[in-house]
Length: 348
Image 1 (cartoon, rainbow, N blue to C red):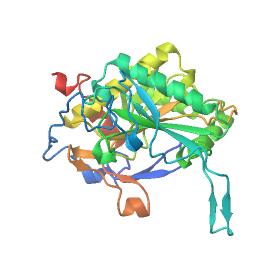
Image 2 (image 1 turned 180 degrees about the vertical axis):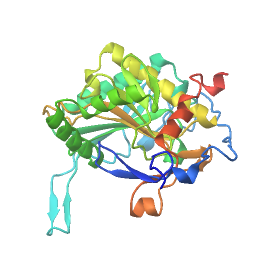
Image 3 (image 1 turned 135 degrees about the vertical axis):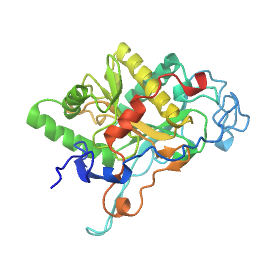
């Protein structure tokens, strides 16, 4: 009888942040890096695009014009998914037919006036300015009595549904706590009440001892492939100090976050020598005025690429109908990313 080990046999891994399980099937990918590695068509862009509705001075929807901005620029989304003036109301036709009104504010943040930039190619000082905007907007939206959660995120790459390659992200704030942060709020509270420490604080300490999933670390943050990762090269950035939201970061911690954000995304770009697509964003405590000592600041990165610049991982079949599944282990993915250079491939 063979002895079970997670490197060779199918197994499930628990995500303690959500309570969900993922199926890992390492035997299906004994050599996950074999085969052709394709490079994407060059994505070279000019610093200014006259047809881009995010570039300085250009026209947006409804005849609005952007200012001739330098650095960051924030505006209310012209096609907001949530509206601040939605009337209150609900539909209740028994247990099977229920609906509630949802209010919120949606904003767009241009990271740079340079149309050709991406986070891994920006200077750390300029990424720090983006983080400062995140802090300011989080604080401002959090003061709104109608807003109870603020979600900052970045969709990078057309493969992730990004409609414009200009470097930008978004902030959607809402009157209720969305499903994924709500799960994390519940699990972190349960853990904190039982142990008196944060779930991610203890998890990070254990990972720093093991080292096999750590990618990058500095004085204040660690980037790693989570033990329970679903996407092939999914990663997280976790603060070494337990803070509930981004506004509580010190000046030095903001600099460190900018630095590790750049280093992690450089590794992504270097993997297949392409502007690597992902959806990313921090998870933070709700903004309803209550105390959340159990919350620990962290940032998720969900990239879809699997074997090359043009081969994407799809969630289909079993994964849609039953449970998420992956062939390469988190440890294999971490080694692949960890061994990559911290110098962007375009700079070599």
